[in-house]
Image (tube, rainbow, N blue to C red; front, top):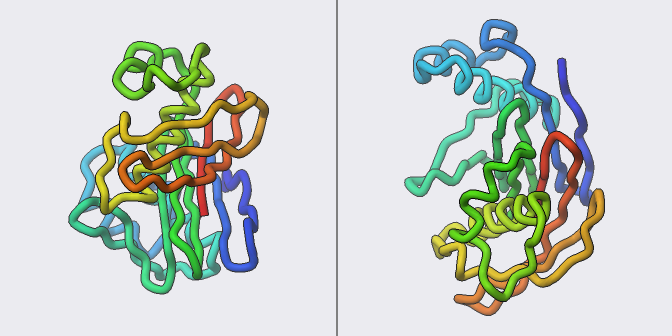
Length: 195
C-alpha cells in the first residue's frame, strides 16, 4: 500500500497523499466493480480506486461513495472534500467543519509554455517551480471558490519566498477576499491546499 501520509491539519481536518503504483486489479474495494465498468482508461480506473483506498485509510470507512455536483466538485456525505490527481499521485483533503481545496501537480517544464495564460503581469514567477506553484495555488483557489468559476487572471498571488513548504496568500479579485494556501514541494510534485 503506497500511502505516503495522512496528516491531521486540525482536530477535524486531514490531508492524505497516495503514491499510485498499483494497477486497477491490485485494489480490493467495494467500489471496484462499478469503477471498472464506468471507466475504460486503465490509468483513470487506478486513480479512482487509489482515491477510494486513500479515503478508506483516512476515515476507516470502506463504504463511502463520492458523488459530484454538476460543476464536477466532489461531494461526500458528512464531509467537505477536495481531490486532485497528477501523474503517479493522488491527494485528498477532508474536513467535518470547513470548506477545503487541494491540488497536486507533477514537476515538469510543461508549465512554462502556458505561463502567460495564468500569470498576471503583477505577479512574480520567474522559475519553473514558482510558475508551477502559481498554477497549483490558482487551481486550489478555483476549487475553493468553485461557485464563482474564477478565471486565472481574477486571482493574484502575493510575492512569497520559495521554500520546501510554506503558506501563500492569494486574492480573489472578484470578491476581494484573501485566502491562505499552504504548499509543499519536492522534486516530484507541488502540493497546494487550503482549509
